[in-house]
Image (cartoon, rainbow, N blue to C red; front, side, top):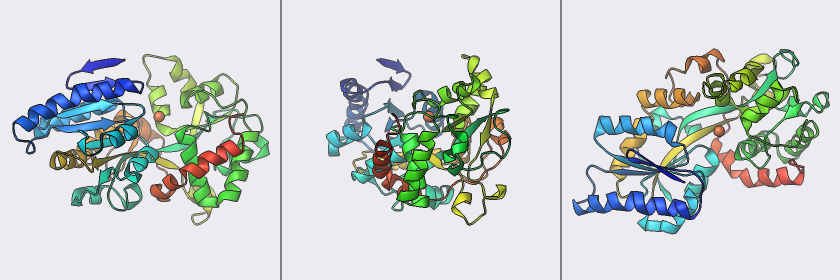
Amino acid sequence: MLTKTTNYMKYSGHGAAFFAVVMGALLSPLTANNAHGAGANGPVNLYSYRQSFLMAPLLEEFTRETGIKVNAVYAKKGILQRLKAEGANSPADVVLAADITRIDAIAGEGLLQPVTSKLLEENIGPSYRHPDNLWFGLTYRARVIFTHKERIRPGEIKTYEDLANPLFKGRICMRSGKHEYNISLLASVINALGSEKAEKWVSGVKENLARRPQGNDRAQVRAIFEGECDIAIGNSYYLGKMLTNEAKPDEKKWASAVNIIFPNQPDNGNGENSTLGRGAHVNISAAGITKSAKHAVEAKLLLEFLASDKAQQIYAAQNFEYPLKKDVSLHPIVASWGSFKPDEQRLIDIAALHDSAARMMDRVGFNH
Ligand code: FE
């Protein structure tokens, strides 16, 4: 299904329809631009895994400030395949993804170009960008533990490792082990503890599941509210989204039943230098410029805009995430959760363990 919005194309689903959007939405403005002698003022063509409701307000602000138009194509899947198929002729200038795995897969195929920008390097720390500056993180969120406010006592669960404790048998809910969020988390555990311990851990978590993995992260919080389990793993921003969901007020009730726990913090007895105190696993949204970009100058301006104080604040607050630029204010609900130490293992190392983690999930039969 395609929905046209002002200047932007919205897309959900994948396959042939995605190609149609690209051809229809992007080729015409490009042709027009080329006819006037391409370059100076864009437009920037963006392929985004991130949804329109998050990106559109930012892109509008960018256009207001710079006069550069952005043509955005939104897709849940298939951007990598599309870029490969289009090759040097791709109309895309910028690619934006909501997780490390997807952006790094695109970089791994040689589809992105290094970006030299003092501003980007200053604003986005080295753990959160590609070593050759092929992509830059923009926002991050933690994969946290949600616990029932009464059925789990404060301090009873402090780490991801605790989730494998037989004490919690039949009390944990989780979404599919095949989902990127859980694969990334397992990859971070492999990187921190080594394969053998990580496999023992994930088997232990599986043994503690209250039900077969199913539903999205919000569904796990609902299951806690409904008494099916006491503990769940989910991304931090979902709690903010649920607590403010006027369209589905039931979600407010679900979210009010849980506490948010940032795992593996050094200040709760886990120790600063031990792997137990390594910090909460985080994932990023990130963007890069395609190798074939026809509007690389404007594309860099867009990336720099997204890393600016103003855009960082809007972008992070809108999705209840954390800005990657330091000293940018948080949404009050996010601020109310307090500060936490993120796991600072390089995300690129975690992305490299993606396939091992996916195989490990299968080996332990996580979804069965
Ligand atoms: Fe999500």
